Image (tube, rainbow, N blue to C red; front, side):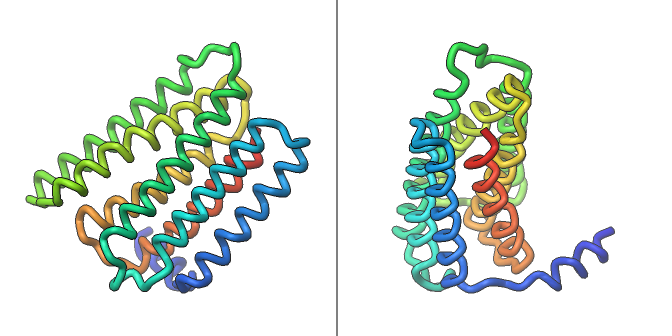
Length: 210
């Protein structure tokens, strides 16, 4: 199974930073198209704004080569993506409306995020990682915000039988991989490829599946 996966990933190209920004521009254009498709509704406007924040985050993280990126650009990118996640959460909270937020979908999502965070902390302790205070603070706040977005979208998906939870999960996976790379100082081409497989899928599904 592992060998087959490695063979598949070896055929996936490792895209350049410029290509990543171009893909992000395409996702922003898609969000604008969906904004018009949904007749300029408030939730679609919020999703467009969220994708705009994501685009700025992509620019911050990819405007210089990964190995030469200064720490402040990482934090700036994290801020933009936190704004993106919180804005997506606002959009889906608006869509939930008077429906019950605390449903089984929200509960399952909350447990999943809690386990993911716990596993990351445990792994950091067992491998004797010592990230900076700033990194720990950003990671903790970031986890809360992306977790809130994931729970909100899963709650909506459960209530309205939508596929947007798949997008939220894909977005969460891509962010989790980036977090692992920075906390554990991992440099792996396969992880880089996976980020840019899950990330566009996540954005498209969150924007469209409402």
